[in-house]
Image (cartoon, rainbow, N blue to C red):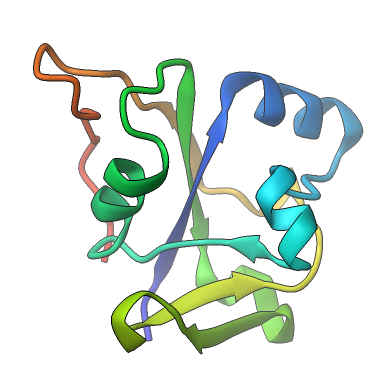
Length: 115
């Protein structure tokens, strides 16, 4: 479906994951039983809906192929297929982590994304 999937997390959540050697997800992920991810086409709306005005975030890019069979594409917002990870995320499988700052208008400023 897509080469790269994305996770938005707080800097603290990601720092804890790097220290632990695994990311089990944010509280919503743990509650739902999987790690919510987005494609490049979905992640801006995810940020606007679920992280509006929140500072101190990072954007985590992960090659979808690195996630294997634990990555499932399931209907979510408006029936669109979203990537869901049914396993902890290994920080070693991450391509990059970049800050997701707020712009003057309160919207997040995204780096260039891979499809």
